[in-house]
Image 1: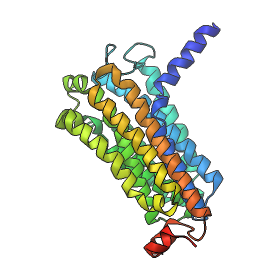
Image 2 (image 1 turned 90 degrees about the vertical axis):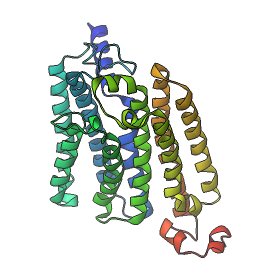
Image 3 (image 1 turned 180 degrees about the horizontal axis):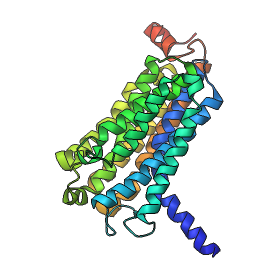
Image 4 (image 1 turned 60 degrees about the vertical axis):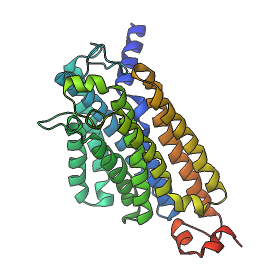
Length: 320
């Protein structure tokens, strides 16, 4: 009995797709680091954002598992990681219930942020919940019509970072917006690898991802550009933490290019480790950027990215 329960738990954990969790927690970690740098961090609120984002991601994964099975795009012999409903490990009814329950708990946590951020967050929460379901479900599922990448960039980049910052600072900030755009691009890269691997299955099922629409060569190019552009978007932070900030983006770019090269020469199931590596790259990018934010905040005379941008160029590189 204990062995059976352990296997059941393992099945549910795999269905939650831990490899994708970096795309939900990274924005919250980054937003919290920026709030700390700006002197407005609220650790309790940050914790609520963290668990809300994680549960929303898991709910989206559960929903994707269920609705892709219903639409026939996930089958038992798929080249990607095992999908619980398609493989018969979890019944469709149980997966649908788990999706609703997980999304419900996420919404309850989100409601705890209303006294902090204002009643308008209810509308935002409804939109986030609807997007989580509309990604794979409804009359016009976004991921089936080439809108998955844009959706991920908006909700796992712009929305996730800026809102996580706002409920702590009660204001928006240009630095935060640039960081949100960068982390959103890295979230898109995770989706690109997933769709790149599944392109033949998706094409057969009528799922028009951007890889199906524009081809693998374009997908690889976009993947490479996204990683480089992410580094450029937050370049002010790298430079503000000189000389540490010169080394850290190079470390990330090395990992990114390495993953890109594997993406270029592998296919099918061999791409599963590349998917995990891409998620790892996003988390590493976030942690490396946080190191730069902390360094730039603590190292005088530059106390923030704003201060860096206001300094003469020579003074930025030759600190007194």
